[in-house]
Image (cartoon, rainbow, N blue to C red; front, side):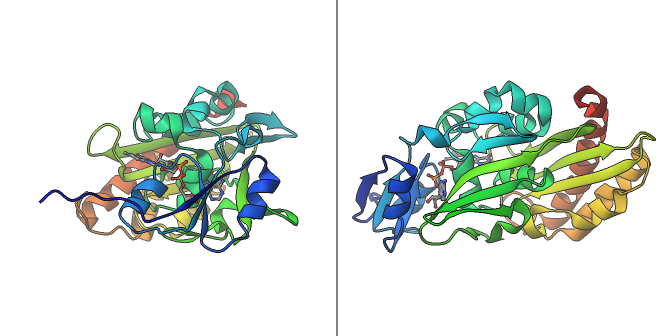
Length: 292
Ligand SMILES: Cc1cc2nc3c(=O)[nH]c(=O)nc-3n(C[C@H](O)[C@H](O)[C@H](O)COP(=O)(O)OP(=O)(O)OC[C@H]3O[C@@H](n4cnc5c(N)ncnc54)[C@H](O)[C@@H]3O)c2cc1C
């Protein structure tokens, strides 16, 4: 017998401004529709059953990527493809381009949004680890104004964020600092697939080539808030060399909590974390002078 998966009945509203969207979002059981690449499949499977969809695709005021006041500002409605095309993003934070090259496929990247990626809070979402590594700030807007939340505090768990009723994610801000290098390394089963594991690194070096700050984000391996915090602490003040990077990779592998699934056993995933963290740190360090 042929069976179809269809969403349950839902009311559709097209927001004409951010304020309009926010006023619609005060209604119960209301969800934002951005790219729809995650929400619509979840609705078809009845894993999500909103009563009202608020389509924000017309809100071009949320679709931008620009350098402003020492921060890279990315509007929530910027598409993955926009981020991959953005010269300023790639120049300041190559980790963004590294990651966007391996997020899904070109069709998904044309429609899926930066905001949707973060708000979906899927443990395998690449940008969550990237923004954690860069210590980005999420700008959450409600009718009362904005509140700023570090991305490292944005996710409460799988598929759960700090965004409350009547709020939306408006922007992601990444502080720009000279002497910074960054990179992202991912392994998946085939091109365009979700990560088996991935690691992102952001390094800032002082004048003696010692590590002044380190950000390490991990994807799909159960790292708390997508961060390898102990590995970051270990690196502070150390030489930016192979020995430090390999040791940090081992600490990152030890500190995460990968689950066994169709993508592989736990020891394989830990091995990937060690190797990918080391590679990301190595490449981030090589890029420091280019970006300074
Ligand atoms: C085949 C396929 C392969 C994929 N592979 C990858 C991959 O390899 N790596 C990866 O990282 N991702 C992958 N994705 C995910 C994809 O890249 C999108 O990022 C993701 O689907 C969410 O973005 P969206 O704009 O489609 O969000 P939507 O599906 O529209 O929304 C997702 C959730 O976020 C909420 N939301 C959206 N925007 C906002 C906002 N501004 N404020 C508050 N809440 C909001 C929605 O209400 C919903 O709950 C894949 C998706 C598909 C379909």
